[in-house]
Amino acid sequence: MREITNMSKLKVSIVIPVFNGEQSIGRLTNELIAALGDPYDLEIVLVNDNSPDNSEAICISLFKENPGIVRFYSLARNVGEHNAVMAGLNQVSGDYIAIMDDDFQNPISEVVKLLDYATAARNDCDVTYTYYKKKQHSLFRNLGSWFNDKVANFMLDKPKDLYLSSFKVMNRFIVEEIIKYELPYPYIDGLILRTTDKIATIAVNHHERRAGRSGYTLRKLIRLWLNMFTNFSILPLRISFIFGILTSTLGLVFAALTLIEKFSNPDMPVGYASVIIAVLIFAGIQLVSVGVIGEYVGRIFLSQNRKPQYTIRKRFEKKNENNPV
Image (cartoon, rainbow, N blue to C red):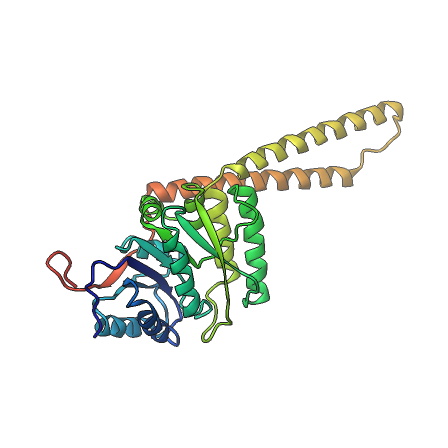
């Protein structure tokens, strides 16, 4: 068992949400300990997002092998990456906190590079994001990232040259601000961007996934985009309002032109097709507007109903007087 007790070292926490990671999380954790255990007072926080494979058993064994470094939390149900990360952020004790995936697409050498860069600039930035010169994601995932980036530019007033990577390092200040958010639909990058503009970036290498498959599906990506739309901006409501005004104005103009044409040409038939088209268009606009409003109202209801971000079923932490396993 390895146990680090040198309190003169900088305390660093690494949060890893685990889902379908049984083939990678063991080796990833051991390589992180080997690379970072000496230069830092290291803490690795593993959060099992109710993975259907054998990830939980492997994470428990990692804790037992490294009780002074590894902490493990198993969630009662699958809540998604951002909620799982929030579960981890609420448990960390480091001065600097890294977030990374469990799939080895971020090599250990790049984790070291990112932490060295972020901690060297400790008074200059709250968050250090990574970006990739060449990403090894699937076409579907890359398209989703591209769309997410463009929407964030518009919705969150994100700097256009900032890539919102899930692989990043935050200081203690920004983590303390993020975990104040207790509503059920967190979006980590939205919470960061609304809190600070002291952001740094660094280029890192990106590898292909070594094992397993990505947990991102179209449904999860849509849910992530909805979190961005409705939790951190009222822009959709404004767009809905403006769109309604514009289409109503067009409807009035169309009605006026129809009346003028009818007066000038009394024999002109009133087109049944044009009536149906107009009804369909305006009914569709109304349904879109009601849907946007309903999404906001539904989230308000769930927030008032105290829907939890996550529920921790099992905790594995180092025993001490204040925090027994």
